Image 1 (cartoon, rainbow, N blue to C red):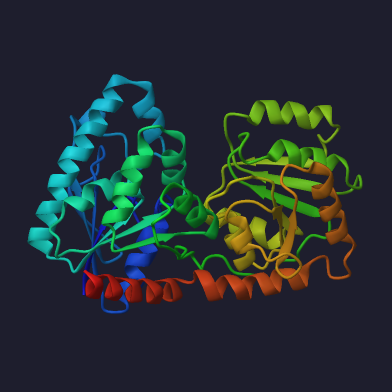
Image 2 (cartoon, rainbow, N blue to C red):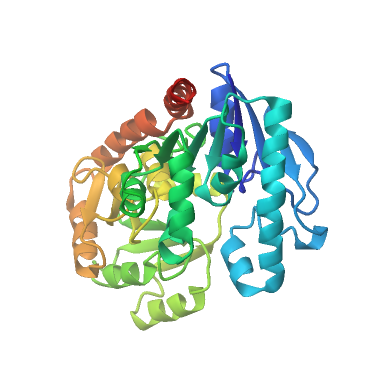
Length: 386
């Protein structure tokens, strides 16, 4: 079987984090005898034809070279909303991308086209011949786009209606999609995580009183609430913060105002390899955000054997099983978050059993071979139903 991935986010190299789960899926599918080619937009200093970890990648031009900055950066929405140049570049991506998909279908002759993100990939793929069924995967940012823009819901429903199969990486996203497209059949199928990198280590002692936050320092990630919760715990309890963002200065000032200067360590952005050690040594990972599409940090934490404390919100409810792999608390409630942190510290094992159960659950659901086997079945079903 041949499958054409259509995406706007794909690693520039095997060590690049952006879109790495798509590469991981492509490689795992290859191990099952499914040939995958990736079609993605061009970007400065990237070749038009590439091969990454055995996967063929083709990149299509869509604008003058200096303007081809919409993909790979995670800032497409901001660029399009903030400038005429961005809007023109997006128009080029949609028109040239549709032509590129059609050309790839003629040359590569895939059995299935798999669009990652309904926008823009799903808009490009419906132009393929009817003999190539479309599978569309919703990852999170694309669902938020459909919800927040007045013109997007109609296009969203159109893409889903033309898809032979639709998947979402969490139950939360599937429910959001069904709310906008009630007729859509949406299956919950997560993307694979790096199970070889994120592992526990018996030689790394886990702290008995040090929590960890990983993520962007902005309002959506909720770290301001975590600082309030930390201030309500015992004086010896501390917090590692791995990440950066637009709110860092304000958050550091808030930390000082709460008297937490000596209890919070700001690490800045850390590579995936550097995060492994932080996950392994943390008492628990705390995720105080709301509306997460999946909650990748929670999956990585579980794989490294760390329990997770999080708000009962979004895709996190798929990852964290309350009382078994971690603790879920009411969204936005700093007091409940503090109580959960304190209760975990008071456990005889400081949550070690939760971390062990979390790793087993994550391996069973997010390992590449498991995810690839599910998508192989989805592709076969799409072929037979088309």
